Every structure is written in C-alpha cells, then in structure tokens.
Length: 62
Image (cartoon, rainbow, N blue to C red):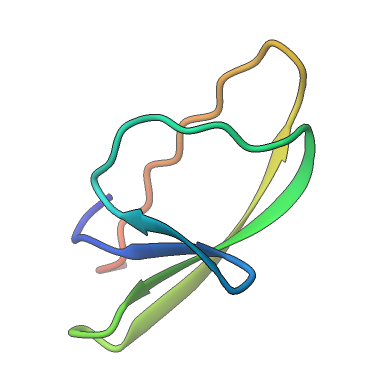
C-alpha cells in the first residue's frame, strides 16, 4: 500500500499498512483505507472465498 493507510472494516480497525496477512470470514467485505495526513479515504470491496488468498495493492496517491 502506497503510502501507508489505516485499514478498517466497518468501525473495526484492522491495523496500519504494511502488516502481516490476516484472515477474514468467507463472504463480501468493504474495507476503508484512510490516510489522514493526506486527507485520503478509499473503499475497496473484496470477496473472500474458501481456500483462496486475496492480495490488495492500492496506491492512495492516484
């Protein structure tokens, strides 16, 4: 993730990038990526399926 971002699912803060892989339950999720220093917030939709890994690479400068 360029630059860093705080990652939230709903009101639950997952952490600050970069961070180690983590698990989400199977299903659809909306993650909010926030960098308050830049005044940038992006929402990313991700679908988690059984036995698959999802990698997100988001550039908050774009």
